[in-house]
Every structure is written in C-alpha cells, then in structure tokens.
Amino acid sequence: MAKYESQIKQVPFSQNAVYAKLADLTNLAVIKERFDDPNVQAKIPADKIDEVRNAVQQMEFTTDTVSVPAGPVGTISLQIVDREPEKCVKFSSTNSPVGFKLWVQVLPTGESSSKIKVTIDADLNFFMKQMVGPHLEKGVDKFADMLAMIPYE
Image 1 (cartoon, rainbow, N blue to C red):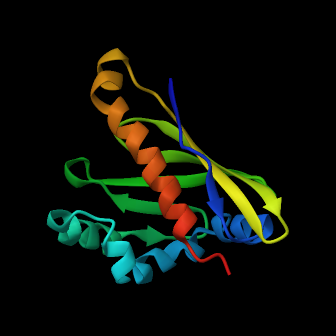
Image 2: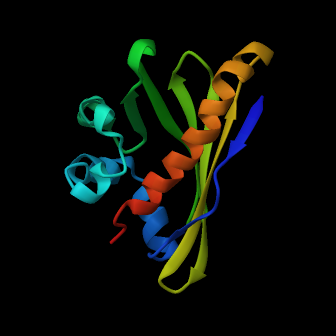
C-alpha cells in the first residue's frame, strides 16, 4: 500500500457543517453548479476546460456513493464505508482498476472554521507506484483544494 496525504486546508465553516455535507454525498452535487463560476474555471488550464466540464457533468451522487469519469479507465466509484461523526468520512473504491481507500478528516479551528486533510491509501505495486504515485500526490492536494472551496452552509 502507498499512502498519500494532502496538505491541511482551512475551511471557513464549522466542523459540524463540513462533516454534515461530506457524510451525505448528494450534498456534493453543488460541484456541478459551481463549475460555471469564473473563479473556479480560472484555476483550470484553458485547454482542459471542456474536458473537466464534461467530467463534472457526468459525476453521479447518491447518499453513500460518488462516481467520477476517469478517462480511458472508465468510471471510478467511491463508497462511504465508515462515518466517525463530525471527525472523519472513510471511502473505499468499488469500481477502479486499482483498489484504494480515501478518508477526509475534519477538525475544528474555531466555532465557525475548521481544517480538512485528505489521505489516500492505494494498493500499488512498485511499478504502478512509479507511474501513478506522482499523479496521486498532486491529485490528493487538488481534491482537498476542491473540498475547501465547497460552500458548507
């Protein structure tokens, strides 16, 4: 197993609000709406806007699962496997060429602020780690950035 951790990201919402939104994945459908925000699009390379827009529009959410198109490998699905109220939501891949677990930790920094950290533990052999590892290192931080931008109100 190979473990990748994001940097800690500050979120201007309470721990309770962040956890409540992440513990029910249907709440994350707001990602589709936020994509049209020019500030969000400005963070995406111009030559990738259409590709990312298409991927975002194809995302599917249920209470316990999220499915994300992943280019040539098809759709990757994550399912919530554990909820530690107000502190952590743990996921496991259910449709992925590589098995992995992902968890999002939420800690308070004040009454109306918190911080999050994303960790991925992937089942990678030595060769896969060399090929995919650098992308997972970047991806885990980008995922944490995306989670930090969600309005948790």
